[in-house]
Length: 69
Image (cartoon, rainbow, N blue to C red; front, side):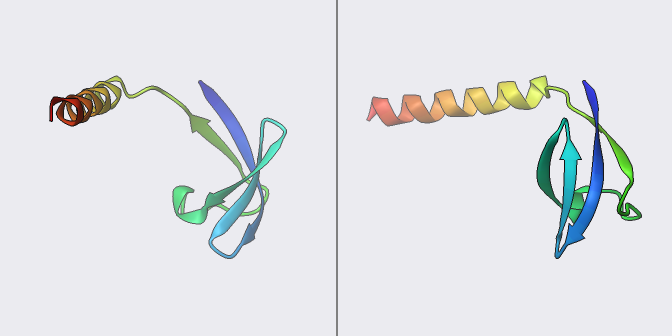
């Protein structure tokens, strides 16, 4: 899914942005270094299946260790 956010302004280390009609604060370090007020940024969200599986397995292992003792 691709959506767009608009940089409204910068406040200290944050960018105040509008996305889908909501206002959010993002760390400036997450944006392109040349981003400026008024820029429209394309944002892509996707599920990282490998990382999701890895984290689920790690959680299972921790729960197993917890209940096996």
